[in-house]
Image (cartoon, rainbow, N blue to C red; front, side):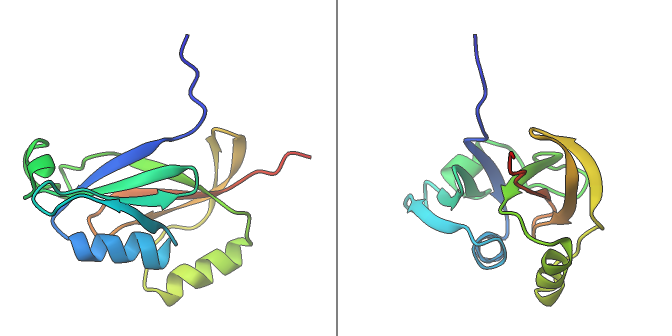
Length: 137
């Protein structure tokens, strides 16, 4: 039997490598953990217990996935990053200060049950859901 414990990694293809790396490192606080040579094309950023892999479409790995992502041809619908608990207002102010377009917080169901989360887009148009970790009492 397979039991999923957490997201291990997600791979996002891009035509905007520098913008994507800035977004995931400067805005979301992920740290570059590993990089392959540019021709191979893989940068892995630590996102808590998981990794966000960024792959340029023109690299060897990127070409394996076909054409570049577009607004109508996305790689994924969205993915959710569990983040440390913080006030919704402080998260909104943080995103607004960095010019990140986002929706309002809404109640949604996730791996830990119901809770509020917010959708935003990275520079490539991938939808990222941010959800505060629910602390068990």
